[in-house]
Length: 281
Image (cartoon, rainbow, N blue to C red; front, side, top):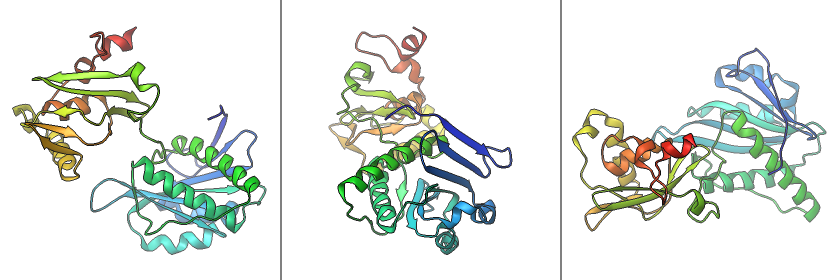
């Protein structure tokens, strides 16, 4: 992804309220705001245009982040329909300042974005079905550039559901791989831009320690991972069936240790240096 300069305008001077975002030398533009400023957002001139939009909130069944991804030839008219959905509390939409986004373009973008959000697996994608459209090669390339800009702007607007998690197959993971051991069980992982990833095949203790019951989030997190089929019982240990990203090294270590743990001390590189030591170098 190429370097870029982002310009964010806070309409009311508050970073959590209505704001616009642009990139240098790009004809696209993003607008974002909370649900309680829905009318102000729709009154913007940009809302008359065609584009793609994201309704962002929490899935009521799982408590996980949730997103609905859509496209519309009139953002304003389409978004009004979604007031019946109550899971979302924030909206972001992208339009083109030169008004060159056709119906085929935005359908293509919608389909690609739905696929990318599902692949990233950071949020529940609430769309009942995918979309997409075939485009000529030149148009497809233009829309791939548009997608790249969407990916650059979304984290700056507080949304990370499109960011792919670090995986064990990433070429740089071996250089930065860290290890955690307890009672003969071994786990491996690495830091990511949004937390810490524990790699598939890592082991965690089967029985929780007393300290886990002092902090219910540890027990609840382990329970959720087991219910989701991510952690399974195998030969007296819990084993990760896929790469899992945690918000911090300590939260990852807590699950592995079955109780409280200092992730900065628990995770070490192949030379035995702790993460705390590595960060101080």
